[in-house]
Image (tube, rainbow, N blue to C red; front, side, top):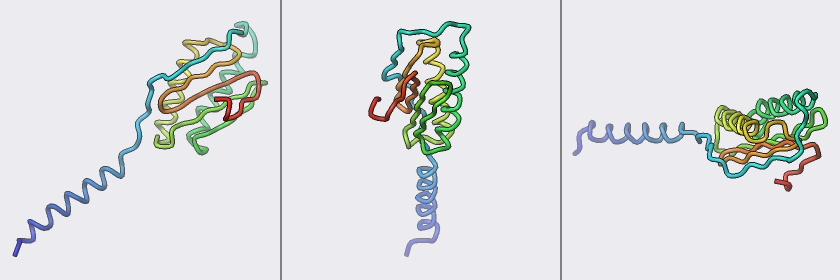
Length: 134
């Protein structure tokens, strides 16, 4: 008859492994798949810069909290953001924040821009965007 220790240790190890695996979350995948910039750029002193900045900030704040797919209209600009459903809210936020920074590095204040990463995507345009557009 096996001793109680020989039975308990494997059971405890199995429980610990299950607990660890259930707590693992997706990590933000920041590898760029694609970025697109509209050739039309707003003048530096226009209110458009503020409108774009606020729109993107709002998308980054709201998307992780509202089902990982968010549409926003602000100041005549339409924005959409989405995250991979495997990401935690924090990782979704980090991915969108990274996409936002990359948009401004690549596209400055173009009238429209899009950044697709492995874990999320972020887009804004001066016209209405539907999910089928991207």
